[in-house]
Length: 294
Length: 214
Ligand code: SF4
Ligand code: SF4
Image (cartoon, rainbow over all chains, first blue to last red; front, side):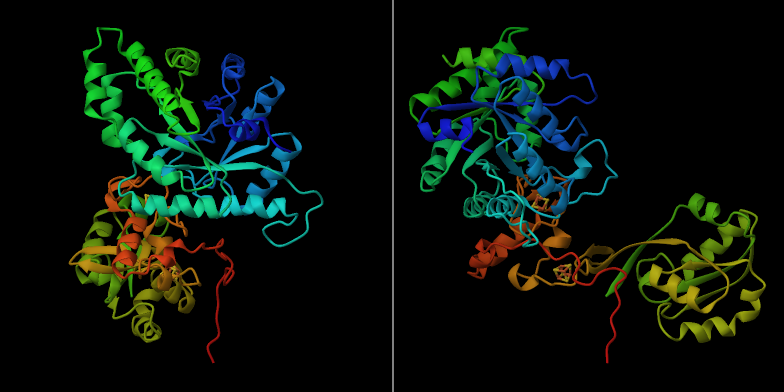
């Protein structure tokens, strides 16, 4: 099965994806609302998998909701909470329900989340999970046993172009490609010059790259991210720009910055698309796209 | 090899001793002395604390190496005091607790938490270097153990949490894969890191682990 997302990636169009954060609890109306708002505006929607190790409604549940409402889901799967049996079982299930795109992640560490005493699993890592998918596609499971019905996925991974140091990160990026990654969604990028350099390198590989765009909501948030979040660097001129916005206008400024970045990436065909993350403010994604002229 | 231990809180020790009023204390002259958790001074300190808390301390001793065969002899020498006690409070790592428990028909209570097997890199600074996985990969990782030094035990390189060379879980801890990359690069052996490592065999020696050496 070639998914709508994969078709879009291969069509040469500038692909826009976004992200849905499932609720902590059973009130799923807001998630439905976000899905309905975005399903026709973006090519596909990722559903996060206990992002930041915070327990939530499951990624696969969000993906099924997207399917039911006519959207295109990308299942985020981390290796933090499930061993190789559980991961494979979920892939079988996802495939039978028409969820055909998977983003493979290692997963955040347990102690950064809200169940700090839990056991971190990490039976597999992201490269191994990618290979697991390719193995299941060949009709065999990780134990080498025959499957009664195989799977087929468009599988991807993440890369952090601002990682410090960068060399080990790029080595891992290449390993993920060798392990079968077809597309990458990057960690948030803000320094377009540095990203262009990364893309010059990444273009050597037969993979599609969607640049991660995370909405900056205030100068404080931008400063916090650049100082504390691994792999994120917000240039000082953007922080200053947010700080200079009139009172109550910082959010609009953030939307403008995100839109401007997307437009620039698209205009110069720097990468194959963007992955827009509004982290809890999904209703603002259409505004960001409008600011980008899309 | 050193077994690195940490003393349990006195509240937890008291809770374990609930209903056990006569206590014999055993320390260890090797690792627990080095980590200042079960040497002579700590045993005497524990004796005072227990007496203050209303317990009767029937006796105490520091066995040279609690996990060693000689432990049996040391216990026999003190059998009078031990027999008159309700329990033995062991201030050694869990190996000593097991060893003592296997000889004495007495309730054995651990006073320490066994944290890890580690090395002392600077005086007083202990760190874990091996998780005894049963399938050593140090030959491919420039002598740094990814199962122990990497928070997630990753085998194929760093996660996205590397933060200026530190680990996402603790800015004071080095990212293992940054170190491994540095060392392999210096040794001109980065090919080892480029090579895909398949999922680990976590059942190399299934638990409970035993081995017979003939
Ligand atoms: S790989 Fe690590 S945990 Fe396994 S035996 Fe070697 S040092 Fe120990
Ligand atoms: S930051 Fe480094 S040490 Fe920490 S979990 Fe990731 S790869 Fe492992």
